[in-house]
Amino acid sequence: MTQKNLSTWLKGILLGIAVCGTILCGLLIPLFGKDLIEQNPEFSHWYVPWLAVLWIAAIPCYLVLYNSWKITAKISRDQSFCMETAVYLKRICILSLMDSGYFFIANMTLLFLLNMSHPGVMLASLVVDFAGVAVAVVAAVLSHLVQKATELQQQQELTI
Image 1: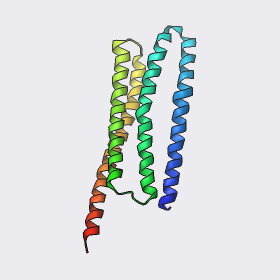
Image 2: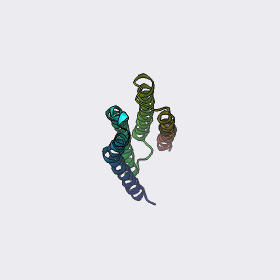
Image 3: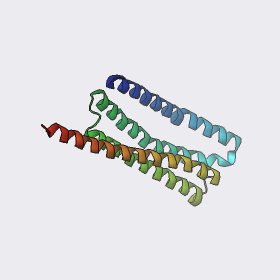
Image 4: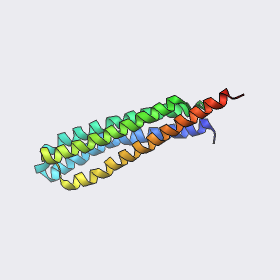
């Protein structure tokens, strides 16, 4: 598979993820929330805070997709191992950690301070937090490896 083909496939996957995320955040979550409050009117005051928390949590995810898009552009130009790619991966790491931290704190706030959640929701959301931390760790490791590969590549170019 050539660099151009790989980049095209990755861009297609990133677009698919962006479309699925938009459908999920813009259509399905609000619909599921409205169905929930129709079945359980006592939860109606929980709808807007939870919707806001989820929409705010989606912003870093789209920033991760943007940085991933920039990485695929580097791949298509056969510049996979450069410092810019390492920087993009580091940004992905930071964004993932920030999003996981925000989501955890928002869940704790809604559960314990505002009494607008259920402990089962908190336990289930720990899976999302763990996934975000896992993405951050993978991005940090890849950033480090790309940085080392870039340094080796630069040293090799200086060798006669």
